[in-house]
Image (cartoon, rainbow, N blue to C red; front, side):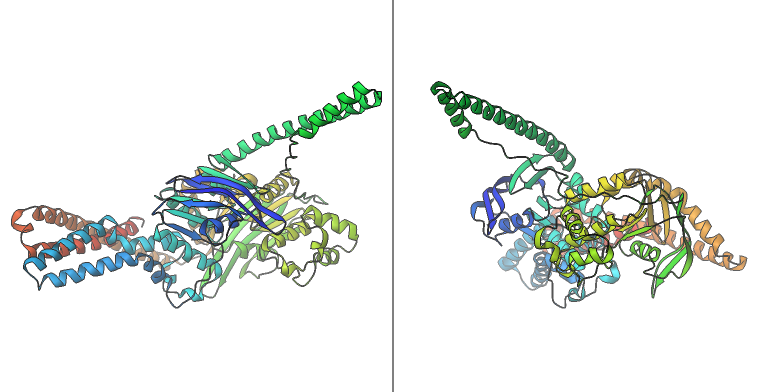
Length: 637
C-alpha cells in the first residue's frame, strides 16, 4: 500500500460533500475516481495533497514516497520556453552530468589519493547517471512534448504567452518527467486531441508508479484503470476492474439495492396495516401486540431510496418534420487561414438518419467545417446544399448561440415567446435548473451549465438535422449517457465533432476522419474505425491523391518535373538512411570494443586512458540516441 484515505469527511456549510471515505492505492496501481459534477472528486484530490483540510479522517502516504499533482487549471508564468520548462524537471540529472564533466577536468590535474577519490566519485556518479538514463534526457523531453501535441516550432514559445489549455499540457509534461511515486491527475485529457490521449494512455500504462485519475472519458478509463473509486451522494465505494466492469457491477448492485428497498417498503406497509388492524380491535391484548410491532418498526434500520441514474436530466430530441433522404451535400469545400491551410476539395454527403462523427487532431479544421455549414465562417471555395425540409439545430462548444447578458428565463422566452413561464421553468428543471437558478445570467454559469442550456434550446428547436460541436465537453458521465441515449433514439440526422471516443462508439454510424487536409470515410463506430484505420488508409490514400490530381489539372511538363523531384527526394532519403545505418553499426561496434578494452588490466589501471574511453563512450551514447531518432524518421519515409 502506497496511499490510504481513512474515514475522510468534508462539508461546506450544510452540504455534505464527502462522508466517511476510505480506500487505498497499491504500488503501481492505476485507479480512477468517478462521480457526477460537484460530487467532490477534485475536493478529495486536494485533501490528499494537503491543500484542503478534511473535517475528519486521515491521509497516509508511505514513508519516503513522492507525490505529484495536476490540477485542472494552471497558472504558469515566466519567460522560460516550453522546452526549457520541461528540461528543468531533469535538473538533478543535468547537474549530475555537469559534475561528471567537472570531475573529468579535475582528474587531469590530480594524482595519488586525490585522484583515487575523484575516480571513485566519477564511477559512482556515472553509474547512477547511466542507471537513470541520463544520456536520454533530451530525447525523453522531446518525446513527451510531441506526445502531448506540441510541434517542434512551438518548443521555443514562452510559457507566459500560452493559452490555458497549453499551460495545462506543459504542467502535465513537467509532472510526467518528474516521475513521482504517486501521480494525481485531475482531468488530464481535457486539452488533448485523440493522438495525444492515446499516447498518454500508453505512457500511463507503462508508468512505474501509482496513478490516481479523475476523468470523464470512459474509453480512457477502460484502458487505464484497474480500480474505480465512486463518489455518489457523499458516499464512496470501491470497485475492482475498469470502467465497464464498474458500470456492470454498479448496475447489479443498484438492482439488489432496489429490490431490498422495495421489499422493506412492502414489509413496512404490511406491518403498518397489521398495527392499524390490531388497534381497531380495541382490545388490551391486541393493543399490546400492536405496540410490540411498532417497537419493532422503530428499531428497523430503514434503507435509503436508491438514487435514480438517468432521472437527473431529461433529454429527448423530436424532429417536427421528416427531411428528404439527402440531408446535406458538400462539394469541393476548401478553407485556409494565412499561413495555415486547413482542408481542400472536401466532398461528402449526409443521408437521413445517419449519425456521423468528424474526428481528427486539434487544429485540422473540424470545428471550422461545422461553422461553415452554419454560416458562421465563409469557405474559400465549394458548394453546400441542404436537402428538402431540412431544419438545422446547432450546438456550439463556445456557446456563441447563447446571449451572455440574458438570464436563463430570458434566453428561453426570447427564443420561444409562445412558452409560458411555467413551461419554461419545467423545461429548465428537467435540465437541473430549479428555484432562483432560472434568474442567473448566462455569463455567470459554468461550462457544464451553459452546455445544459444549449441542449435545452436544441431540444425545443424540433430540428431534424443536429450539428453538434463537442457536445460532451464539461458533462459528467451520467449526463453523457443521457445524451447518448437521446441521440441513439433520435429519428433525425446528426453530424458532430467530438474527442470522446466512448461517446463516438455509442452513437456514430459513420466516421469522417479529417487528416492531411482531406476526409477519409469509415462506415461504422469507433471500434470499427480502430480496426480498419491502417487497412483503409492504405487503400484510400492513393485514391484521394489521384482524385486531387484529377481535380487540379497539371501539365505533362509540370507532372514530369514533380515526379523527378519526388524521385530525387526518395534517393536522397535512401542514401541518408544507408549512411545512418552504417554509422550506427560503426558506433555500436566501437562501443562494444571500448567495453572490451576497459575490462583489460592494462587499461583499467591507466587513469588517463579510462577517462578518455569514458568520454568517448558517453559521446557515442549521445550520438547514437540522435541517430536512432533520425533512423526512425527516415524509415517512415
